Structures are given as structure tokens and as C-alpha cells.
Amino acid sequence: MFSGLEQYQQGHFFFEKGNNLRTVSKSVPDLPGVYYVLRLFKGKVETVYIGKSGTILQAGGFKGQTLRSRVNNKQENMKRQDYFNQKIENEQIDALDIYWFVTMDEDNNDLPGYIEGLLMQQYFKIYGKLPEWNKEF
Image 1 (cartoon, one colour):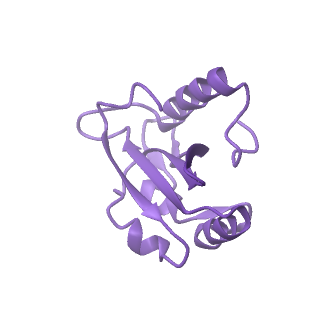
Image 2 (spheres, rainbow, N blue to C red):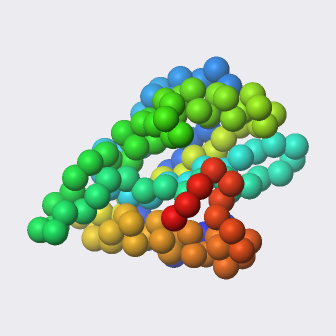
């Protein structure tokens, strides 16, 4: 779906109802980057969320959550594990496919917020709106 991510260390995992999010996301690195969530349901695949990890400080250091901790944190004031399970139940989702990309490591030095903005722009250009689970940008 998104172009310009090929150079980054990347991967993905599936989350289905009843899965333990920490277990299925254990291969996500503790590094800065971006991620997006695909909803698989009724034979369709839709991007429903785009996010980033942490914040870059003025001096160039990284503050806050890494990709793994961000994926496992909270969304809409509830644990992401519970949020995903609730969405799967309410929207009759078969599974979620979460893709992650490390944008800052020994090979790349791209700000997660910048790359998140590029992904949001690509999505917005195609659909004229944000992904369904992104309330604002």
C-alpha cells in the first residue's frame, strides 16, 4: 500500500481474537519507527491506523516508547490488547495485520514523525480522509 519503506528493517505480525499482544509482537524491535494496522474482514484488507513511536529531542536523542512498547501501549484510553479485541468483536474482524518499520538505526536516520506524516499524506491523497482509527493528525 505504501511506497518508500523498502529500505527499512521491517516485519509484521497478525493479531486475532484471544491472542496475547505481547506474545505475537515479541519480534518488534525496541527501536524508533512507524507502524500501520490492516483490518482483514469479509475478504477485504483495509488500512485502519498509522502510528509512530516516541519523540526525537532537540539534541537528536530519542525519548519515549520504542516500536514494541508503542504497539503494546494504549489507544483511546484502554490497553491496546483490549482495544484490538474490542474492535475485532464489534467490527467482526477476522484478524489484524500489523506492519512495522525501523526508521532510525545504524542504516537509517529518518524521524518517525516525518515518515508517519508521509504515510498519512499518501493515505489522505488516495482516500481524502485519515484511516478510520486515526482521529486526527
